[in-house]
Length: 106
Image 1 (cartoon, rainbow, N blue to C red):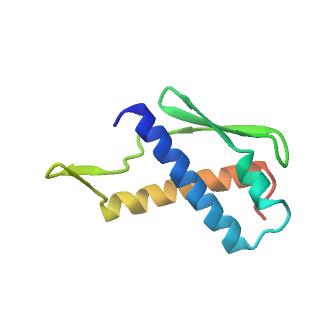
Image 2 (cartoon, rainbow, N blue to C red):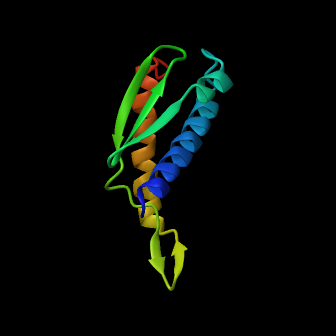
């Protein structure tokens, strides 16, 4: 996949898992909307830099070269359950690293 598609897919999956995690934990330490709106994503080679200014200043760099979002079959992109499960675990770990850095994980 071209870098831009992988980058955009990373952003989508990261924010999806983050929103679900924050809702599931019913965390009210910070303004959720402000937290999510302050996250910036920047592609760096085969990685993505995630930075933020709220509730503290920080950043993380996540490798996406081995994240495999879809497999092409019969000229269509089909999500494979095994790949999805592996990627879900990866994104949960990325979100947990982020939450640890902003002191939201307990």
